[in-house]
Image (cartoon, rainbow, N blue to C red; front, side, top):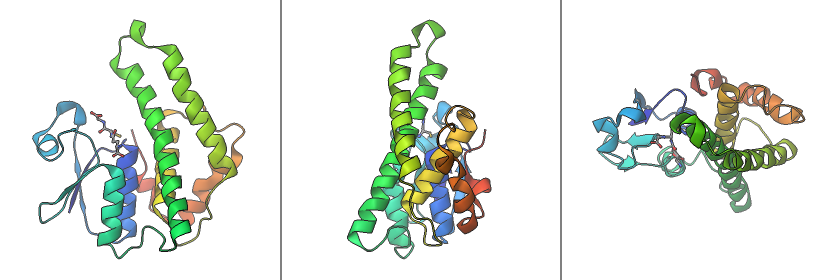
Length: 198
Ligand SMILES: N[C@@H](CCC(=O)N[C@@H](CS)C(=O)NCC(=O)O)C(=O)O
């Protein structure tokens, strides 16, 4: 199994952590999405990472579909069996990914538009979604034990991306969220090796 990824990509960090947690052997293949490499666009017309290529040729994207695939392939370790708990884990994943979507949209607005075309009100509206999401997470952190789930990995990936790209801009007033990785790392000591890195 291969996962096409880049070191800064938060969704790639999420699925790579999850594959490791499920003890599914996989090669991480570094790609630069900006260059539309053949291995990426031949498997995923969207040219986005993460993209998973299984040994039998099955291709899976996006990260949410990859998580469900890993869960099925890895003995259902990634999402709780109990329906209410599973919904909770999936919604935590959706919120964490959703905050990450806003952060990435802000990065792309600044990176791909000339300065005079960067639209500040749109950046502000993305940031207000981020702020509401982070406040909610700070007050509603998941129970974190050795039984981790997809929600935990999405949250860890989101915080890793915040630390990489928004350091010093999100922590104030959110001490529980800021220190949550200290708890997570007790049960997933490999966090530093997987989280977004520039
Ligand atoms: N919803 C997708 C988002 C994937 C995504 O946007 N990945 C970024 C990197 S973190 C990417 O591939 N960007 C390149 C592009 O959009 O062309 C997922 O969960 O996998």
